[in-house]
Length: 99
Image (tube, rainbow, N blue to C red; front, side, top):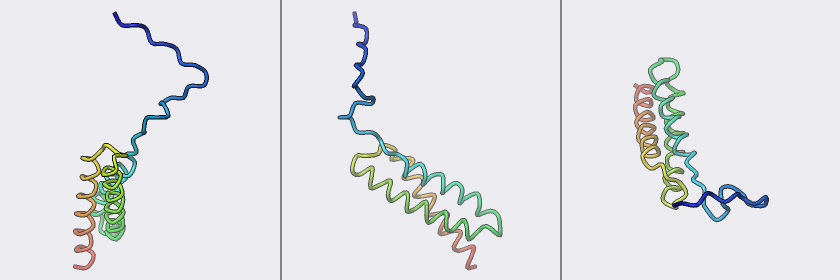
């Protein structure tokens, strides 16, 4: 039989201090900016905004990959998707601006 969980003492913190917390924010921001850049790329007057959002998504994706390589983040698929979609949005939007 398993024993019931013991109550925490008043001075105990949660999560335990020895445990590293995940820092997945950069990957999520990268994907969000990439999707927003993709959506604004379809509006003719907002294509320059789409370029800026794509570049920002790439930057946040790179920072997210650095956190993944250091073991601070765990959302590899989300970060790589944001990085790839952001790069595609930036390139296609730049072509649309200058063409």
